[in-house]
Image 1 (cartoon, rainbow, N blue to C red):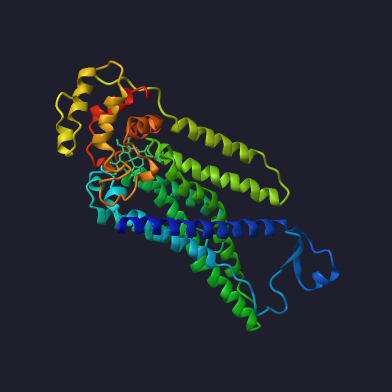
Image 2: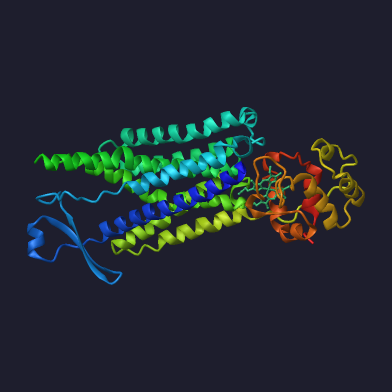
Length: 427
Ligand code: HEC
């Protein structure tokens, strides 16, 4: 029951998270479009009132007339609309989801026994959880210090953008060394998303409040507040597409179980930023086709890096003659493992494959999983029968070859068994 409640909580949180993110990012994309599409006001009246630009739009059967003031209107209305709850809701629901999915089961999802660094491979679940949270907190502090030190008066924003890009590559590399690939992509995405929300919380909104307060007191607002808010909001603009990719990457294990995972992640971040830049420029009437071409080249490069290598060599003839690993895992794959040993390089049958699956996978991937903490088949993949195994053949071969499965190699799959799956033709 507890497992089910966690699962249902997960669904509800994810629903909220996606809706809040759509609302926030949608609003952000809308305001970038609005700001860049403003044209000089047509009427004398507007110009005299201090209007710097306006946009006429038709939407949902109504006509809209947006006006942006040079600094501020002569008088601010009491019911000024502020945008921040969407950003906060997105972060809070995202962090709650991260807690439910990762921090409650860090030993499965955050510890990477295959890490090249022994200290990381040997971390306890609790340590890995703390480190993941530290990535978000320290990552934001480093990013924010960089903004303040490199371009305090927004005079070196170009250099700052390069520095932020380099920082994201370093984070991509570090996370893929320390955490399992899936978590590495999520933590990098969560760090970028944390920077975005923290930009709203610590910089954009407080700056706007100071400006509003100054205006209400009849004083001139500090222009640095406006410029700083703009600097952070520009970063948010270029973070959006990469963050959405990193959040979705969890469904595509070929991205993060790849040996080039950190390069793939970095290329996606740049591809997202470049594609966003194309749309930003379009709003000001520039159709710079170089940008989408660069984006497409980056995406093609990713496809090339992520593509599975040609069929691996068939199962070695020296397949295991004992069935100790299976016995160690408390499974009953003895018969199957022996069959594999006998079969050698002959065509590998579905029965041989399925006996390995039963030994190593169905603890989780079953209509009734026996592994504690897994109330239902993960990713909806059930491998109880030959037919189900056949149905998922391609995916099974991919996740076994990349060692993404069994998760954290909890069921102690051997390299020989992996070789059998690799040599299987999927039929
Ligand atoms: C300890 C539990 C556990 C074991 C054992 C396990 N898996 Fe998984 N598996 C999971 C979880 C959790 C997911 C979902 C992770 C995700 O969403 O990426 C998953 C996802 C998958 C997926 C979908 C991956 C994708 O691209 O979304 C496949 C295929 C898969 N497992 C196959 C296997 C095979 C084959 C084995 C045995 C060799 C195995 N699993 C063993 C827990 C397990």
